[in-house]
Length: 349
Image 1 (spheres, rainbow, N blue to C red):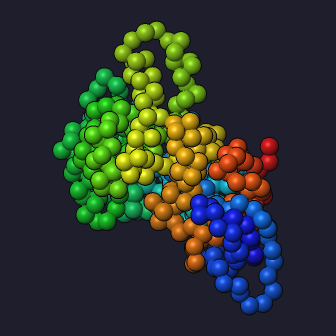
Image 2 (cartoon, rainbow, N blue to C red):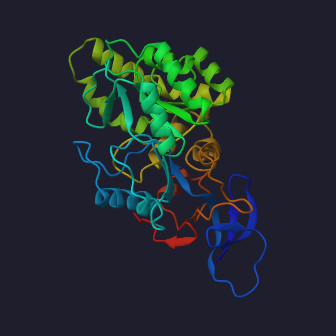
Image 3 (cartoon, rainbow, N blue to C red):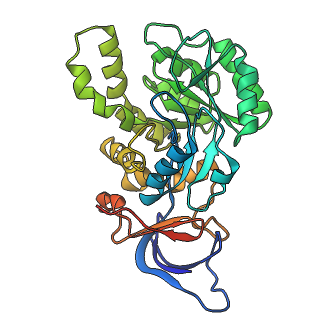
């Protein structure tokens, strides 16, 4: 297939071809079908923190996974990082050409000392062995719960460091759930690669995260809808903790980007296919349109090792009628969605 348009983020006018699941800028021999012309083209969008396929009890089913992944694809989200799922994603679904590319991290691991009780969490006494096993069985990622209750200690730093050292020794990476000041600090100081939520992420921690090429995924989309309701609750430490954590996210995202941290877009929860909401949060936080869109496209793909619209890159792209850097609202109305070299039907609305 042939596609022409303006390639983002470079802004260059381009003509490219999709040969199976690869991109080329050299016209192939033989007949060519033109899929679209004169669109603004981004590499396929990415939600780097989403958990499709689970019901409220944390039970994973193939049917629910397919349905929720289809919602992602309809919105132009062609790749997902799933940092925690309660059952392995079947190989047939991972290979399904109609479903997004996946980067999985296996079970969301909670040390028994935290006693979270969350249905998505897998308790374990041996966090180091479990983390290494999940990273090995999945896509080189594992995810741990670094903290839980606001008034309880975070994981001991010696334990987090042991997890990170063991996982890094095999060339894998660690993501961590962090929603308290103590949990965020221990995760960053002990070398966690990707800080999920990152409440109370201070400037000194941002500098440390930037120095090692780490990532910050605010997932503000999951929490902002709760703010008005929480404000009606009785005053107290828990309310202060929640509102303070959310209030700090915009500044943390802006400072992290300026420091060189990879600030990435992840939604964490339903509705699926809504990564644009995280782009909108980053725009409101003061990041430029190029940076905010990149957090859900070219920057995210680069961080996850998914080649974009380059020679030999993966044939995932989204086309828009106008430049989303000038009119970000168009991100919700893709004209063309291509996944694994196949044109899909974008959502309208």
